[in-house]
Image (cartoon, rainbow, N blue to C red; front, side, top):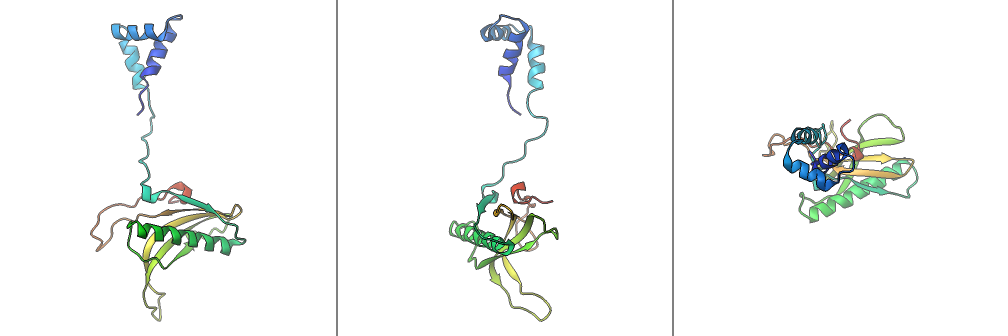
Length: 181
């Protein structure tokens, strides 16, 4: 909620033409219009609660590429995420090493803007005869705007799971990265 005391003084000055803010402040000290000031102050601020700020490690990063074609643009996005993840490992935000990044489209819609779920891979397990190899790493999400050759990515913070020893809930990626929808 933001404070609008200055609006109250302006409102009181507006009630009595020719009075200044100084006169309005004197009227406030006297108190006869106190109920009017309380009414104005009660109506100040936003009705909707403010969204909590995005944690620094979950903020969006954007880049453009000169690559041509969807596959090349997605490859550029994967390389950018890999470079970002390696920098985060150097800052000790999570454990590495980061070998590469792999992205899969989140939805089947293949329009001009596609959201991908990605993983900055730190370990790849052995392949079995019936399943793909297990990949372990840090999840990211990227929103690719193919006509503009622009992509925006964010680290994803999944909730604590079995064996992680950390409680929590998922923090949704910012809308710039495709959000949760």
